[in-house]
Length: 206
Image (tube, rainbow, N blue to C red):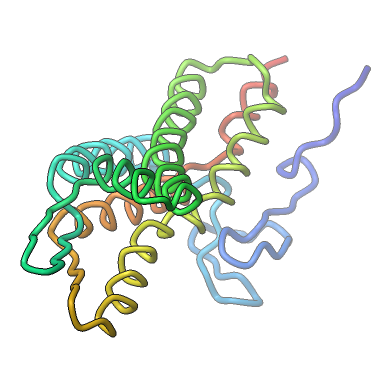
């Protein structure tokens, strides 16, 4: 069975920013006619840049889990919580749904992104033909959940705002939440830096 024609063979190129499909420009650096972004057939240094951002995010994820993210003060009782201890406390105090949301946003989502992006980078670097369609779907899933990764920071901010209305208790964010926010931002940049078309380039050798 003959393979589908590639964009390069058809003389077209897609804009990285707005997705407009254009005729291939004569030289590098030509701009998209709709948004003005530079057109590139592949993102430059995509693999190296994505590795750097992913490793930086993983390093920052360690203090995000070790340092406390939230302090609660109630009737003179001061309690600093890390992500895990906060999840346990929410569960014990009768908020299992909120504990599940924080656990999913703080542990499941970041670890899934580390695992999936690392797998995509390794398999692409090695020129693997393994499960190309499934890997492309995984990349789209990582991009989708990236928009929801700040949910944990949002929960802390929401709790802080709500509890400040009380007279006998107080909640304030601690440095752990800053490291977590940086982790989320770097993983989002990492997924944006990865060029999924590199996975399909290997099929050109068939």
